[in-house]
Image 1 (cartoon, rainbow, N blue to C red):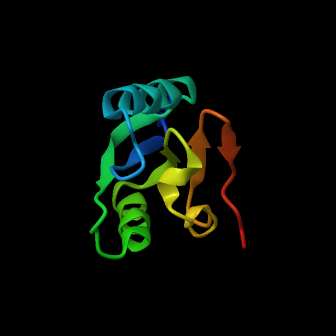
Image 2 (image 1 turned 135 degrees about the vertical axis):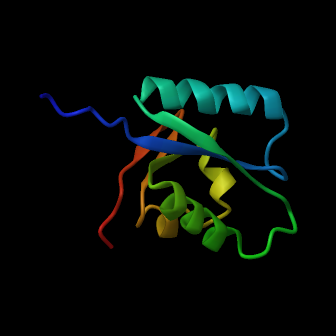
Length: 102
């Protein structure tokens, strides 16, 4: 009996204070997830007043066991891209930041 192939999961990330066209950005996220071969595990939106957004992002990655976060631009990480890349890949239209060991 053959083993079942497990498709890696990805979550989308939108900072609402960064996006100027939410519908377009959500479409970009969905397209990038499909192109990367990820199963889309949901969209995480960050409000301007979200408490500890980096912690929320990392917690969500672990909770859904995501291999990647897909976002329309690195600006949606609000300066936390390096920290988040310690737990998963970061996928943007400009390229992928691989998961880092440091």
